[in-house]
Image (tube, rainbow, N blue to C red; front, top):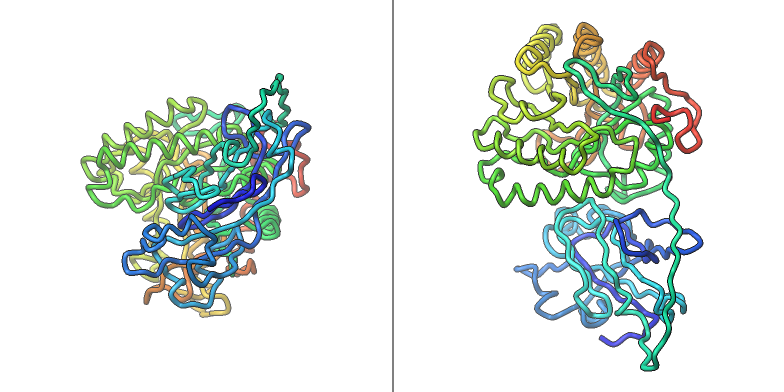
Length: 507
């Protein structure tokens, strides 16, 4: 399709989280910031949207929807970007749709961008899940596999006017401001050290999820979540189970929240998941993750997977290679993965720097037997430490709770049961805290949506806050505990917002 030189037309699939047009110079993929030499044009807002409901999900390619306005291919919807399309429309078919969806936006660019040949115009996609193809003015410009991480392409040749008369192009200076925090991270046999001093993780696991917007980035929601983290006294979270928006890490740098940065390697449970093909893709994803997040001082450890079948023989070599590759990319940070395997059978554990263990005693087994938790947890910690002599983080624990359900004595799904279960875990954690257990991250910060199943009542209810960010009884228990721990440690967190990195562990 023919467009004027000041117009850029793009369609992509399956899902666009956010994107921007920006001026840039050659180099690494920096977060788009305006400066005297750089301009930024956000493409967030309403896009035209169409899901390909054809049987083979390929009608859009067969009819080349990218060569003309999307509305000419059939009915379209208005779709806000960023957002999750599954949560926006009223068409039941979209709720669990799997296949190609198409987004389109017509953009008018500043005149200087299209006529000054010294200007470099870059199209940057913040995240698109999970395979994206981008057309600009009908030209296949960019493809990317894997969600959650940004990708970009120079589109200067597609949007700029080329004159036949010779022109003189002089040198171009560039200005870019990057906030900086200085800190060191180290691991001993029994400690996690930040700036040479023991650090204890007391925090949460999160999800990028909320009503209506789904995984779509939202500043009011982000600020609300950080205010709740401050209220809670949390000093850390894990990006379970994928990289979060870059703005989240910027807030962590600003507020002094420590991050375990996890790649989207979840569900590695079959032997074929540990093939060379999978390994090579896994390494590429880690390259993208480290490249994007390495300059954030809040990131203190990389996590290369969540709950893989690490007891399989092939998992040993697989994780040895992925972890070695990640350490080569960034020798300054420890590397882990989060396991739920038996300590004696885990083939990947020898290669991590910190043991991160998920366990759900008195929830997924021994239902209701809260009296067993301390014994089971103590045995778990002792077995892992005696085998590997590495610091341990309780990376997940918790119980499903439906707010407003009350039972005494505590019964499963009541607020009393969640509180009682956490109390028993805390007693077990305190027996090893200060020895070799270096952290605890509750599952989960807030309730989140999942696929429908008989085991899920409108999603996962293990949050200490509801999906609408209202506290359950357990939130007050954790608040009391976390502030007590904070006041006992060398890194008590200030309740006031810091300016950039002031008053954070990284200064």
